[in-house]
Length: 303
Image (tube, rainbow, N blue to C red; front, side):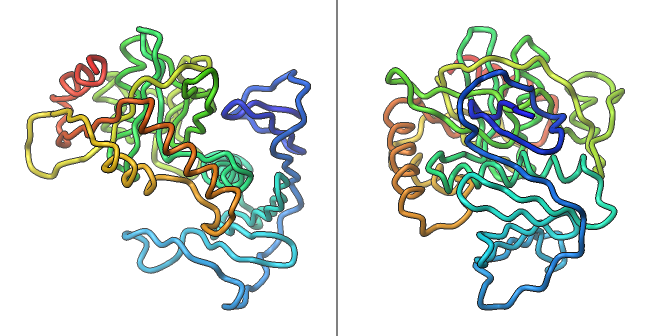
């Protein structure tokens, strides 16, 4: 089966229900082979490159990256092992883990990092095609409000391009964002604040709601917002960032598999340079107050 993801062709041995199938005849950029579930093998300390631990996880890693004879291993603990060799990804789910959970991790976390290793950098960002026909994107740490802001723009007639990762492509002297999949995951309070109800299905193994959205076509990126969530009550504000400020901030938000691949590093530098040269980049400050959401949206649409 062949699917479209960020403008690339993905070939998979198992169904990817989040993605749209494609009839494109291009060679697949990513080939995904899903094997039978099994207990993950042990890793030596020498093979481990790094671990990612979230603040609220009590020191337990969410994922681990290691170098092995089989390729680069991205282990998402208690979910699946993903063995990456070039454009090939072998998926080994953990026993009794649902495919819906593994698929979500594959599309959101693993595929962007595999694309980066191939020389196609992906930003930790969400993007929407506005009613004006231009695309805007939002980058920030998890939990800052990217998906909520996308939902608010979709509720006003926009079309979703991607949630959590974008792979901007330089085409005809512009940066283009290609669609990923047509749904957002939102906490209940965000869902109610934006849509007025929470009558949406719950995402797999998650308390978030999955909200289906109209999906846009590939669109030129005309604005990028670095979200800064303020604890104190503040009036929403938008400030144009300098090139050096934007470059440093965007570099923090790249979905990297490893940091020492020359091809990936060169492509990353080229993309970031093009972004700061061609796309207006703003710092968007706001507090966690849904009553101010309309004002935040107006700042985005007026950029």
